[in-house]
Structure formats: structure tokens, C-alpha cells
Image (cartoon, rainbow, N blue to C red; front, top):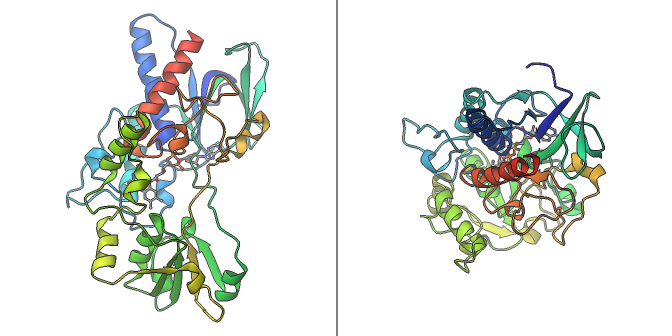
Length: 363
Ligand code: FAD
């Protein structure tokens, strides 16, 4: 990568699917602006990881997407279909994202972990009289007028502490650390979690290990025909006020083929967590499929106000925009910063509006 500039208009922190979608709209703005003789924007994308693809190269090998390739694309470039007709795997998405950043020649720097973003009075480009100082873990600094934070959640796995669990198994790990079933062959494994990861990991392990699947509440499978595209439609209609149905009313678990097979043919059933961890129960390992929290530690110095849900407050009319700090956008973390923003198909619309807001403020 070329050396880091000292000052740019926009720093995008993170170059997973969300950061790349923002990079795409910055690229498109510059292409149109230079044709029309308007101001272009200098930008860099700073990504902590040494390799492209965001979280995707780190998921378990058998992970299946919720939807077909044609409904799993970022703006501008379609995800290629698989020759065998199956939905894309995590490796397919990682390859697609690597190709995406090369194709649009996005200015990604890596490994470039950002340790802090601070407000800064400086001479460079600014919004409402202020800019940002972005500091990397190695001490390098980049100044920017605007920051789009797109750091995902993979680096913040949520693992409940449980004394009962510590008694029940010598080994505990989070789904973020799970890669493949072979190391668990012949073992008794407790899988905890009623979201999408729990049943997918359970289905992956079933042919190799004795599996107990436990959830706090009875698991709620979505109807078998609900895929990522249907979820996107429901989420968008709900937020636009066109429908009362929220995605969570449909259920919590997308019935991807491996999960359907495990449930219908291999008898995968959930037991209550209290029963699975009752005194005297023992397992070789527990895999916690208990979700993630947004990775926002680099924004601590900004002292953002948080909502009752424990996430930074963002604007109603522009859900990526921080209410406290003009020029700061939060992209791709979940519905709180844009409906369906944590999906490939959904993040583009929010990235476009975030970039439009920055362009308007810097024009
Ligand atoms: P990430 O992919 O996590 O990328 C964030 C990037 O930021 C990473 O490269 C990271 O290294 C970098 N970073 C983090 N902190 C810093 C820092 N301080 N400084 C610099 N860089 C930093 N999504 C779909 O669209 N369709 C699906 O079908 C689908 N199925 C899924 C199934 C399962 C079982 C799971 C677990 C997830 C699924 N997802 C699906 C969700 C999807 O994987 C994530 O929502 C997505 O990876 C989020 O993208 P992101 O760009 O926001 O974050």
C-alpha cells in the first residue's frame, strides 16, 4: 500500500462489507465529480486485519449464507453464483470482497488497526469547525473531516459468565473460535444459543459428535421459505412504517438447508439451558453461540451518548449519523444504525446516504 496520507477528507475505519460499500460510494462520487469539475474527496480505508474479507474468512468452514448469490451483493458488482447451485459459503463471500476492493481500486491500508478517534481542531478539511484525529495502534495519525466507522462485531464476542458452565465442562469457547467439527469427534458438546449460529454449529457437529443444544427460550424457526431477501423486505417495510411486522416476529432462526436437515432428519431439538447445566451434567466442551457486541472501542474518546439499548445515539432521519458528533457515521452494525445494515444486500443504501451527507457537508 502507498504510505498513509497525513490528512484526508474521509477515513473509513474497517474494510469488511460495510467499509467497502462506503468506499464504493466515495469512488463513485469522485468519478462523477471529476467528470463535472466538482470537488472530489480524498479517502482512506483503515483495516485491522492483514487479509481482505472482514469477518468472513474467520467464520466456520461450513457456514451457509441465508440467501442466494443474487441477493447477497454489494452495490455495483454482483456476487458470482456457485456452479453447484448452492448458496454462497463464507469463503465465497471472502473471495468476492477481495475482488471487490481490487476492482474499484479502493484505498485500503492493512494491517492498520485504529486505536482511537478524537475530535481535533486543525487546519485541514473540517465539518462545523472541527475535524478528527485518527490514531493507529503503531502511533501513526491521519486527520480527517469525516469518519465512517464500520468495524463490525466479530472482535467483540459476547460470552456470558456462568459458574454452572465452568463446573460442567473443562473447555469453553465462543462460536467466533469454532472452525470445523473434526477436533470434537466422539465428544459430547453443549451448544448454547437460539440465534442463527447455534443451530448452524450444532448441524455441523451432529455427524461427528454427541450434541446437546440448549437455549434460554424455546427456539423460533422462521418459515422454511424465508431467506435473506425476504428478511430485507420485511425490515425495510417495517422501518418505512408500511408494515407492523418486524423481522423478529417471523422467528429468530433462518432455516438454511443444513439446519432444516438437522431438525427434520437428525432430530435436532433444543433443551432449556437450565436443564442442560443442571448439577451433575458434564460435557467435553461448551460452544457459546451467544452473539456479538458492536466493536466501538476506538470511539471511546468521543464520549458519545448512548441509548437505552446501550448503543450510540443516531439520528432518526439518517440512522448512520451520530446525534452528538457531526461528520461521524456508524455503518453496518445492525438495525439500530440502519435497517438490514448488517447484511450484504442491506448495507449499500445506508452507505450511500452516509457518503451523500458527507459530500453535502464538505461541498
Ligand atoms: P466485519 O465483516 O466484521 O468487518 C469489519 C472490519 O473492520 C474487519 O476487517 C476488522 O478487521 C476491521 N476492524 C475492526 N476493528 C477495527 C479497528 N479498531 N481499526 C481498524 N479496523 C478494524 N450477512 C449477510 O449479509 N448474509 C448472510 O446470509 C449472513 N449470514 C450469517 C450467518 C451467520 C451464522 C453469521 C454469524 C453472520 C451472518 N451474516 C450474514 C452477517 C455478516 O457476517 C456480518 O454482519 C458482516 O460480516 C458484518 O460486516 P461488517 O463489514 O460490518 O463487519
